[in-house]
Image 1: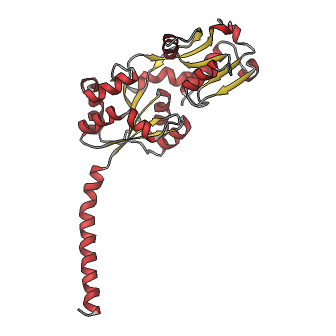
Image 2 (image 1 turned 90 degrees about the horizontal axis):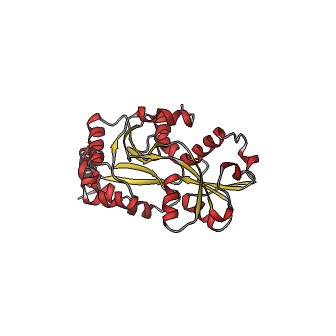
Length: 280
């Protein structure tokens, strides 16, 4: 076979390969995984995948499409990715879903029953028991952009603390609530701020603490989806979540997280939270 025949043969093979690729691409697009966004607070990709495995496996099986999880280290990073519509779905604090709704049209479809609220607490030995006792003390929060931190600052404003940086002797921020607990244990801060449910968890584990003040309850962790997904897909995701507590794998995830399951959510459920945090 001389050079011209070699060239013609290569062209023919390239053409066949190109046609095969074109025929194959729609199937790949159809099978592309859903990306589920969460806030990981610095946990590794492996840890996040392991923590959510029961839920993602259940959703993949039920939706007949792979669900892959991705963690963002903080609320700001998550908001940037949501604005770019990186995620097909999200499971995060309700403020993050509201932000994503305003920036990119995500819609809440399900949430954990019950309410989240901010709590100010202090080790019993600190003798800090009332809000006025916090003046001049060292206070510690989770991330600057975390919902609980924003709720805390809104609560301080209601309590008449207009300039927290002057009211407290120091303000510290930690990656997560575990950092706040460690800060109190190591006497790095006098007052810790976290989700009020953690006060019960920590005291049940033997921590001696005073609950100084709690804020008003807001909707719990929320599952949102992109509004430009077909309605049939949004409905399938919602129905799968509402039945998650009937699946063994999803039950393990819910039990590990101490969640009872999911209940329906709609945008109007978050109107008061949007006002509290001035999310427009």
